[in-house]
Image (cartoon, rainbow, N blue to C red; front, side):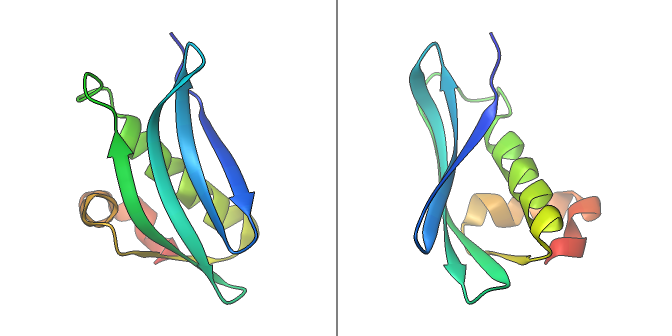
Length: 94
């Protein structure tokens, strides 16, 4: 079972998500703030997927995206904020 994080953007908002067997199992939404920031506002993982690390995988993908595009992340979502609090290597994008 591969759980690859995918990205979809639509205008000034977007989301990272994970599909397993064609079904979306996790979602993390964000909005663009100006040209140089994204605000992560919500993370959800479907019941039965707890402990699989899906949330952290999506935050990791957001960090990679921010680094690639030279933008910063504002983690308003409590889950995303908790990942940034725990993983000091991610703080360069804050």
